Length: 435
Length: 86
Image (tube, rainbow over all chains, first blue to last red; front, side, top):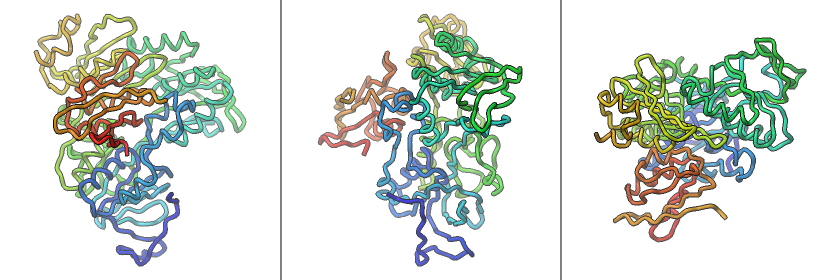
């Protein structure tokens, strides 16, 4: 068991006294202990058995599954809590990877190749990976600091929500219409909670699902007694110290015991920008995940990298992409030169419904969006085209089409000659890639 | 007892002889399908099933198991030892 306490060996190689701080030298320094950073470290170690590797994590835990944090069986304690851990404590020692826990990077000097940590210590690197991940966006509403306003990003957040969900049924107001919101609504409903969903958007998952697709989900929520309040802002959280309710911009007041504010993520890149690393919505990278500064790579949710297929930079922001980016960055840091290419996809599940997003599903003005008819009730499929090629797709209750869509996207086939067949559903997607 | 399904792998030259899917752990995150599209598919209960245990090489198969965010895929070697997760 490692502790948070750092033991500084002033006789160790690389030690230099810098006033009250300490410097330690590593071959590879990885900022971020999530799936991207840890996969990078693991990948590097497969090639470089000798290099000194450090991971800096702002959480006190080894790698865990962020995907599991909103899944009913785990949140409700029907599965062992320990299922969440993806790396054991011993793994870091076996791999000779030093995990700095509960510390964040606060400054970067690319000239001297040094990263300053939140405790004042300095890490010197030969190669650096920025895999800082995203943070839960704080809800900027009057009274949001009251007890009972909860977020979900870390395992500790999830533990708090699990404790509430496993307790006596209460009234919860859910803010935001993301995958996590949808999944936690099911968790709470299954325990007899009253849930009120408040969103800015016109419908669930806007803009990544159409209104028609979302209506399948929202019909189920309606049947379950979940009130969905759309296109609405919250004016204030009510209560003295603890949450007692909310007041909407319309003036309507809704009493509640808890508020779950799942309103997206912020990318903590201020200290990275200050170091001269080019950023836009995320940290800019080419398709080799290299930033604009030599010997510095990026991977995971904060990465905005060049997409060869689309000819633009994109942020992926999902587990699968973060893992693969970590692997690719790790390979490249260890001396290979491998591009990151992926048809990304992710899914969300609730009340027996499965929603899937494959590839690039942003409804941008230059996209053509086709409804591909599916015969089964409560199913939907949209195909998103750009320059005649399929670049993305969404599915409701047709997860089997996600794999088919992936192959179609990978094929880069010009399908503009099949538009009417696609709209009628008279051509099998499976066959289209080979036509 | 875990709700697991075993699939025998007979790919020539492979050191992996068995793929086990723990259906209780599977949450249909479908990351394994992203790595090995020809190996896995989702069934009617939204759980991963192996449709072709021999469709990919060992390295890709291990990568597909490693990609699972719940460690629902277990791989066993031809000598019966657990190859993944370790």
